[in-house]
Amino acid sequence: SLCLRFFQSRTGLTVAFKKRYGTGVIEALTEIRMTAAKELLRSTAQPIKDVAAGCGYPDQNYFCKVFNKRWGKTPTQVRSK
Image (cartoon, rainbow, N blue to C red):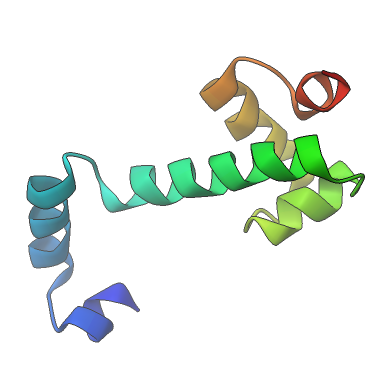
């Protein structure tokens, strides 16, 4: 959908994005999602599965794996602080 929006091929878009922002599209999207998830875990009482789904991860287990890889803590550990 990004390629269609910006009238670019997939390669053109990824090369231009990386040149401009210094990171890949997927990495940037993951960073945005993980930052939002961390904030939601700290500021709401939503169940982790709802936070995961709201941040674009319908699979809670995968969300927890990505979250732990990014922050070095599980969602439960972040919430308890």
